[in-house]
Length: 166
Image 1 (cartoon, one colour):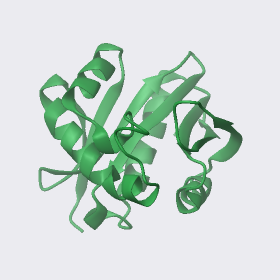
Image 2: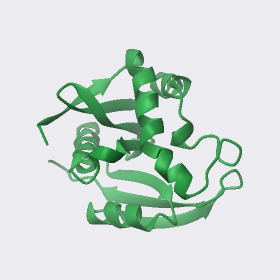
Image 3: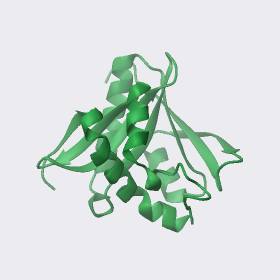
């Protein structure tokens, strides 16, 4: 794999981000039988308006690129002075298992340090054992599992302490 670079994404990137997020999560929607009817806010159905709304709320997006072509992205949302959320981590299926996801999580962790946050949280499909294991390997710990009436699955919330300095 060539050198990967990370750059901030902006309003002009909303359409590209939405397409990348949709494509990256389509296999998850298929695996867990998620549809627009039973889970309309799943990332596999993302459109540019979602990204626009996120950016207006202060969510930061970052692209991971290889030779100027996006192969992944991630979002970071500040929940409070102490906690930030890692959201919409997305890597194109053909680019997985090459360190792209780890690079994106590492970038978000560095951003969390810069913001002075104490913890980085993420929510995932609780039954997605491989993803849960992957996040655990990156220092995340399961905090709780919750069922929401509007979702056809339980959500596993995981947190990781943010180091004081990186």
